[in-house]
Length: 202
Image (cartoon, rainbow, N blue to C red; front, side, top):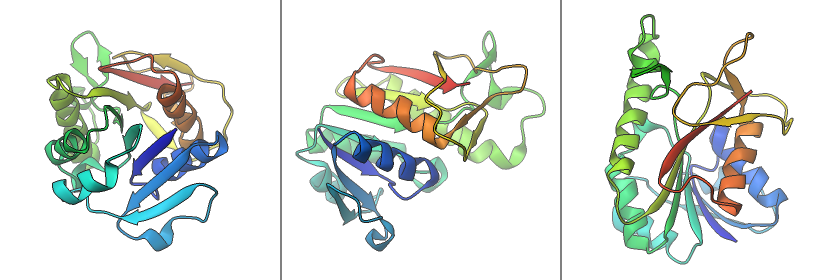
């Protein structure tokens, strides 16, 4: 498949890039600084701005799917969605956040007592992005939320998928960037969460 990856040099994006390459996909890595994209087989680095709707749409056109892995505090979800719409690419996958996951019926993590204030802007942005996608009628989207701790770690291939509830174990709630990337690329190859948010964790 031909995949466009917006934010290919971030912590999540770089692992998704490696996973796509390992599975033989052709990737257009769209970043602000193409020099930071590693030289990998079938990867084309292109400079792009997540806030430039027309320019981004032109870069995305002709791909089978788009994955965005950009921070919510540094991007505008309405512009990203509009760029994908204009590009004509039908499938849009988003690296989501954990803040909008439920920790009790009707209680989102970001609304729970003790939620760290330093994470609130990013978590609120992610929740707003999800709300926009839930009203989307054109794109076939998926929003993959990580667990509470989204961290560097090994690629184990052993994890669980869930829906709108935060996944956790007695040791806590976590997922490595590498294992998250497996779940994301699985969804690209075998869509199972069309117009849904889902989550991944140990």
